[in-house]
Image 1 (cartoon, one colour):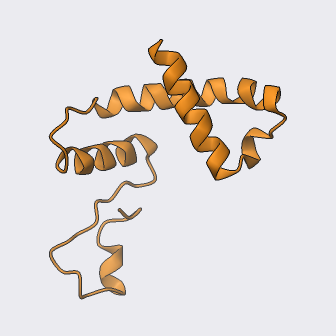
Image 2 (cartoon, rainbow, N blue to C red; image 1 turned 120 degrees about the vertical axis):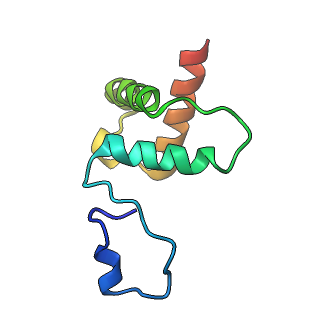
Length: 95
């Protein structure tokens, strides 16, 4: 992906035929591009991009509360902890 269409061609010519998708900085567009790319590489059914964005928004709304309990600053969560929080959120949401 890239923020602008064809920007990469200014500095890379040897990936011809593998054009990055332009997302224009739009998070919803980024989610759709990644979701569609993953969808082509799995036999499993994936939720739609809008549903994924809604779930992620719910996770981000929940995150400050769990960070406060654990004494983390939501803006400075170590990557491994962030992944554990995502897993915990998903588990809690599916119960």
